[in-house]
Image 1: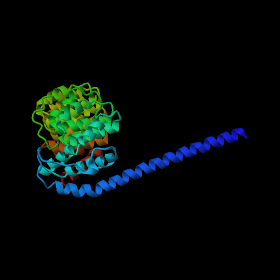
Image 2 (image 1 turned 135 degrees about the horizontal axis):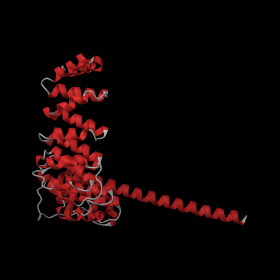
Image 3 (image 1 turned 120 degrees about the vertical axis):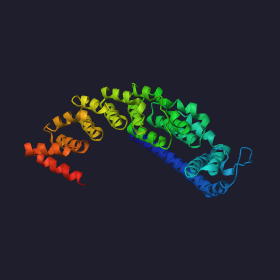
Image 4 (image 1 turned 90 degrees about the vertical axis):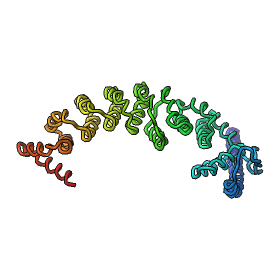
Length: 351
């Protein structure tokens, strides 16, 4: 009985603690929700009116009571930061400048910097996002230090930030990058760089020789997208890279920046490549095949692999004036399977 009584007391105590903690948590959440609604009721209207004004550094400004820097207003100030960022995304010129003015004059930058200095990764990433969206250029050097962070979310936000601050010059972080860049990161960064003028990317040769394979892949994409013809030799060297993905990206890049020797270089790699990269080589030759690689293509026409034979037949028919005649002669000498291949290619050419 004594043990049962003790267990009952312990269980009742634990239940009471859980109930108290749940009540307290719900109370805090309700309080934050009421504060958020209160701020929302006045802030959107207040902001729309203020954006029409003409503000400068010396303009008098009074912080509304709901947004003053006190602990009770923390949730409301975060709402204000989020709304200012969402508003700025759709504005340019003086109105966008006013958004930044309000962000600074309301003292909201302080909270973004506090997040940035946090040891908690999601707070740090959020702080970086807020600072670059509000164009706090003076934070660039501090943020640059996190472009090689071990946390991929912090790393991506930091890399995005330095590009937002400096455009292509922000790619300086690639010089020392040891952490990987996944495909999503690369897509986001390339999308951010898309509207900018790359000029002459002088660091490309160094990046193409990086020990970080993801840096090499990203540099190959830059060379391809922006047609950096000055690095054709370095891209060709990447055909010897030990990593299959790097070689595959180099093949794609050479399709746009290759020279007269590129078709032969690709053919010389074909026999030792993986099946996936062989397919890429043939796809690339479909655009840049020369007379020098015609013997190779005619040989591959006899490979015995129906997929390869059809792909090679397309290249021959589209790349050489006598391409269709070559296929017709092949079909006449060996009807199976070349007659069917010929009919398929002719059907595609007629479309």
